[in-house]
Length: 317
Image (cartoon, rainbow, N blue to C red; front, top):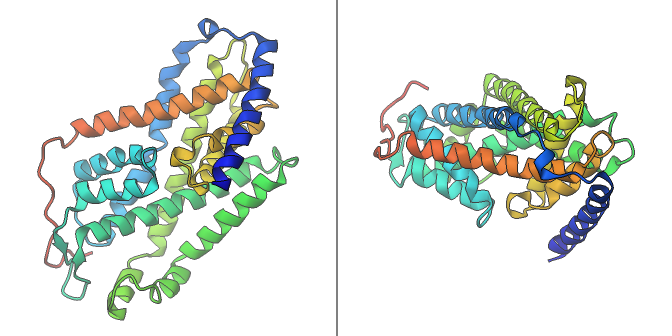
């Protein structure tokens, strides 16, 4: 209740400030340069691809041999679950599409657990890497832009640094053995050994590229504003805005970070862009449009195909 109240007050303040600015700028929707929208949409969608690829790779590393089409469909159809009713639905949708309720045992020494459990574990790993790298990218890009808002930098450093440290292979292998994911200690050790440095470093690099692509999407979107002269030198600002607003929105536990993202994004963009509220609102619609379009594509890809049956013998992973 307190979280919703704080977010509500912040949203009211943000829209009040933005409304005053719109009154001064007198921006008309008809004056927006809509020809830039397709490129912004394409870049934003491309920025989500590393998350799907990383999740797919983690699934295979954990022994669940899912096809690219099946993992694509499960990943993107699950994205809208974070809006209604919330983030837990993302795991539920992925598990129902990708894992079903069949049991999975990748090798004779591996744990015998439902496939949906493996799908969910891989999704948690992907989400933690997404948030950790997003915090790091936001801090690097926004360090010189947010000196007057140290709370954003501090929160990003605390969250990103904490998650990143816990995801380091030696650290994760240490704590996962003591977390009661499986009843058997041998099963937990088996799972921990699959989180290797190549997986961690590859995921870090791919997510960094993804965040830069999403920042580029916002940069291109800014060209919709009339007489806006954005250049690639503004990429650190837009990337910091996208990454930090998404991370803090995730931590708020508000479905889709609704309102929270806008509150964080507004002050980051305001020093550089005119009619910043228009840009913030456009960015929310851009993200929703990209997710809906990806969902529609995912519904067509592998549509009507039966669930992949998980292997019950050694996979060689």
